[in-house]
Length: 449
Image (cartoon, rainbow, N blue to C red; front, top):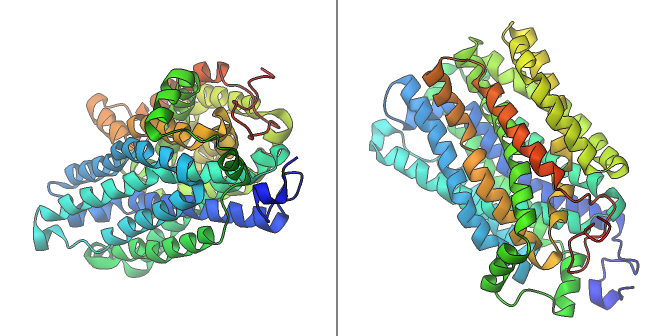
């Protein structure tokens, strides 16, 4: 049993933290996630304005360039994961998370300040690319760190429920960004939005980053990390840690990679690309194409805590099997439903969202538990970000390009099916970790498996 001195004054003798401390830890974690996805929301929902203001070429060419620029930030994420992950395992989760949220929010804020292409020419897209790279670099440490921070604070038997609120932050941030862009679009009108209105939502990221840093600065580092710090169980150096990951923990690296392929192809196709798809491919108006995913995401937000709590009872793997198989079987019929009009688009999106919820609700409980504490941050950050850079942020641009190349409007459905098949293979090798302790230097659940 740990002493008060060992795990800090905010931890009870049995290893549990007081309710108020747990709530603050969840809020501090979720705020960074909300800020990250707020950026994705305003970018995805404002891509037509951004492309017109900052990109060269025709409307279609400029949109494709803007989507490609969105993908560029994801290509930098592995570099961020390699930098922030080992750092978080050595100096602590809290320190890294305070830095990443400021960088992330600052980069988003500065996008709103870029002069238009009419004013500075090609420097406009160049500045956008640079800021997206900074955003991607900081995000490389943000999500893995936030999920690890939350998971290491949460009780073992409620980790799924607590972790689901990190994803509530995901959808809340994305929905807030989308609603903000849609609200200004309806209020200011198309001409004003193209002139300057699209910039306002980007500027909101500044205060969000400051609030997030304040919440995180008031927290101690996680009890689990402080235990290995006290016992001297941290890795000797970043180089040794990376070597250990490759030699000793290559299997969970690959298993997580397979699950992340399924997770992110569905995620970015469903959330980021859907407004563009509904407008350009199915012929919905701009406002309709923005409203459909918002309705779906608000419903998903309500269901996430219930799905997280259910995973604490039945396990993470059954939740993932339900989601992967359901999406694989039903995605094409549901895309046909969306083709029928606005009502069909809402119903089809809601059904896809409900099938996706079991994955989304359990990420923050499942992924940190795949690695032992001394390499948890790095293992999560590297595997997650390498896979996300290849198969996540590239999904909108890839889908758009492949639709143009093949002429098939069902390309997003086919990519979802392929990703779910990869995820199902990886899921076979996942160690069930529901209810297992994250403490110590072993993989949670490995002995039981």
